[in-house]
Length: 437
Image 1 (spheres, helix red, strand yellow):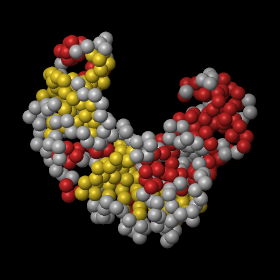
Image 2 (cartoon, rainbow, N blue to C red):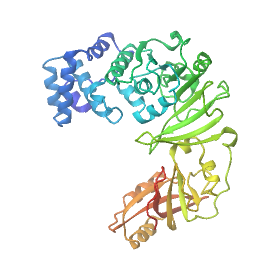
Image 3 (cartoon, rainbow, N blue to C red):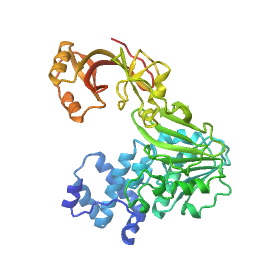
Image 4 (cartoon, rainbow, N blue to C red):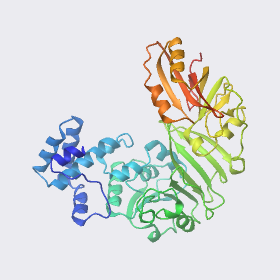
């Protein structure tokens, strides 16, 4: 894409609040009727896999080079956003805003927690991923939802997106172009915040430290101390700090494959105050949760002496919350090594844990493992790796096998010994059980 735009004499744009006024005006122009016609034209062309040089040439017949580049960028963002937003064809995005936007299922899960709140604000709302779900939350028809963003264009985009995703539920929704410290909180009984983790305080680089967020976590805690329910979206790796309130819940939320975000819940309405929680939300919006009091988080399990009949892998949200050992405690599972997430033991059918039945355990030796796989008539191989170098996984992934059966090879360590475990998957993270060997 970049080479094609250079060849056409087009600059590759990505919205930046500090860019010059004329370019910012071009982004505001995107919301005009003439721009919408050209935007849909470009989207149709990209869907048809037309040559990008031809798309650019047609656009430049009607608009400037800068606007042509911005239209092409927006068309591609809309197409990319369909995975997160069913109404993406009618919405506006910035590249950074789309990357940071919460997906629909996770946003709806968080919004459900605010069902008893009448007046909810979404601070640093971005292009509106969480804002839209909060506006659609179950509640009274008189409820209000207010988005707030310190960047004018982002706030305008969010207002448009909120209208594009409107529902018949009722309630009032709007977006303010305002900084957090200038926002009145007197009537707010619920607040969601997604502070900027790549702002000036962080030298415009991504950070996980709350003191460098904009607004900082300490500022949010201080200003929202009388708000009934507060949810602060932060990076999964964001650590605690001394100035955090005591009665909070830290919840790691993800989908069926990965941990997406950590949410700090605080306020009088927090249900699981003093807990650490791992939550997986599937495509239907069903949430599976594992919550533990902070006093029990540091439990350690003894290491396994040998590989048991089954290998279990906690969900990424469980691992991010450092709850893997606690999850395996009640069914007598033991970690293979101190720094390896795999747990070994019996056939424990637990949600938020995917399981594999062990067929054979071998030293981590490519040729010996390949010979064993061929002897088992394995043709389709899933490769998993923890605690050993990446190159080992790449070598196994390149094995040429022609058998008729499927298997999983788990490359890991038993204490300090590198091993390859040939196994068969028997359950997913959400607990669906398949046929065992």
